[in-house]
Image 1 (tube, rainbow, N blue to C red):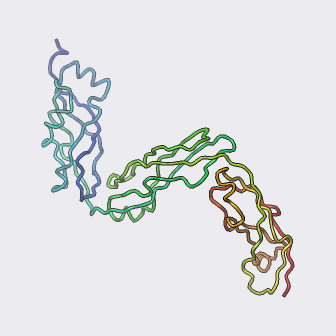
Image 2: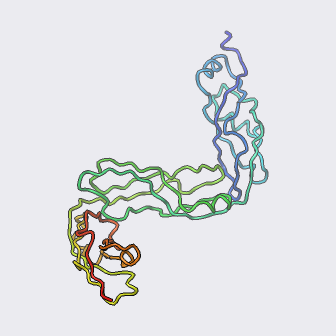
Image 3: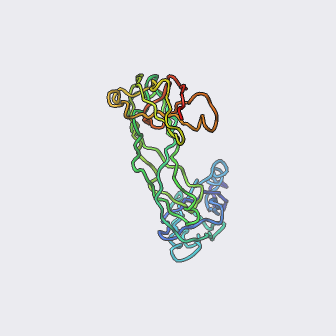
Length: 285
């Protein structure tokens, strides 16, 4: 009989905001957890000790379009509709939620994909990974948006990949409650192909030759070996790669050999080796 009687008990619950103000950025000045004073039976009191009931409630922020606070007592009817029919919220602590407001600004920033992709041997990303959309819209205070140059995704994790794939990835949640991002997910297309080895002879170019009329290189060309996707094997030729040596390496650093550096190289290829990696030279004034 005692368990069938009505009692008032406290239930902690998490707030889920809805009906955000469209032209005002805000930051809650209190925790997102409140205490509900719930009237229910002894049975409900018993189960409330075992688990939080209800686990969350939705709170409308419509009042923030004209005020800087939200009063729970104005929304008790809506709160009660979210509970079991035999339960009743009679009060909420705190009854008033306060918010800090600043002028709302909109900014578009590029998406930065965070990835951890493991490929089957001899497979890899064949070309640029495509994102849709490439940019997301961030809204919030101007002083916060000035700090944002790009927005990262959650980590895309794929294992033993050997074919192209398309997935949706969530954007990372904002660490600032008064900064919002849209959309919350992006489509990621990962082009995958089998890679094979290719070697090209690339002529060397001399840079920073300021004071010398003639510099002879031995050899004049180097062999560049790299991995390339099968679909690009015929396409990639000597025009895609630039190999250089820097005269400052001798005139400033006094090295007796030039180090070969690739100043142009396809992003979707993987360098294996340069042979030779250093070349002899003769300087004629």
